[in-house]
Amino acid sequence: MNQNETDHVAHHDKLSRFLFDNHSVRGELINLSETYQHILNNHNYPLAVQNLLGELLVATSLLTATLKFEGDITVQLQGDGPLNLAVINGNNHQQMRGVARVNGAIADNATLKEMIGNGYIIITITPKKGERYQGIVGLEADTLTGCIENYFKQSEQLPTRLLIKTGVYQNKPMAAGILLQVLPASEGTAESFEHLTALAETIKSEELFSLPADEILYRLYHQEEVRLFDGQCVEFKCTCSRERCADTLITLPAHEVDTILAEDGNIDMHCDYCGSHYIFDKVDIENLRKHQPQDRLH
Image 1 (cartoon, rainbow, N blue to C red):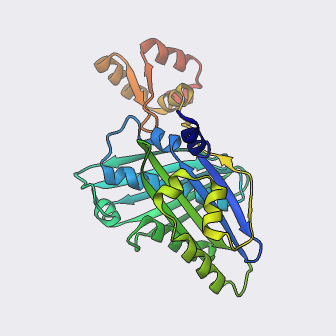
Image 2 (cartoon, rainbow, N blue to C red):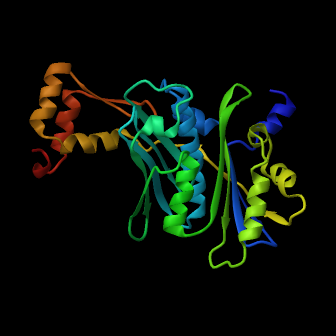
Image 3 (cartoon, rainbow, N blue to C red):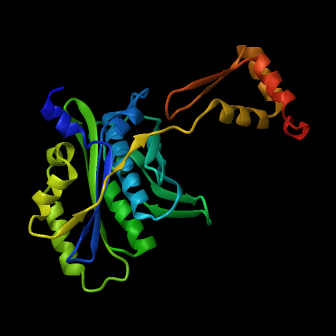
């Protein structure tokens, strides 16, 4: 990799927050490559599903950054179409994972409605402290960004503009986006917000994929006073483990586990998110049962 390429990828998989000094508007920029690639690995998704997962990944990361909390967030699409589930899990550390379930043919240029059918978007926030919150919004808009903006209108009541681009850059899948949002308790910002969002809409996919945050902001807002804060790294991280699989197995009826062992010789637990396999044989199950309370074995 030459120096130019190194400079271009140094900012990938990073979330950057910024603030306009002369407007009551905040923003976020994100550019994802490796994280996105990890989510696509071990799956043969149709192109339209790949793009939608990229959009969902960007949206989830940007959503997480707008919420001041410690904990987990899940953004999922569900419907009765050939793509009946697409989900991204993340947390305040910007650790992400995601998966889709396809049950039918999907054209490369399929729309959100054609993929999901009649469905909705579910946003679940699980803070480490405090109560779990879940918001559900019907897929009334034609695009994922439109649906997310509707969510903000209904739940946060804050004008929000979301721009997301997916594609390929330097032979790698890329997903990037910009979020602009009016600050809470701000008045008289409608005109300036429209002006700032109109400028954001002039950004090209290649610029979002290839340029660092400071250069993007300069190109868009060189006549504005913008404060750019230190970026936060985004990474793929799966929460699966052998221990979690063991905990699941021990809650199943013993006769069901024994039947699978008798038929297959072992139990292969596969993680859809990262592709890991956790194998349990008869000896493993016996050891698990020895160390579990009797009321969990039936």
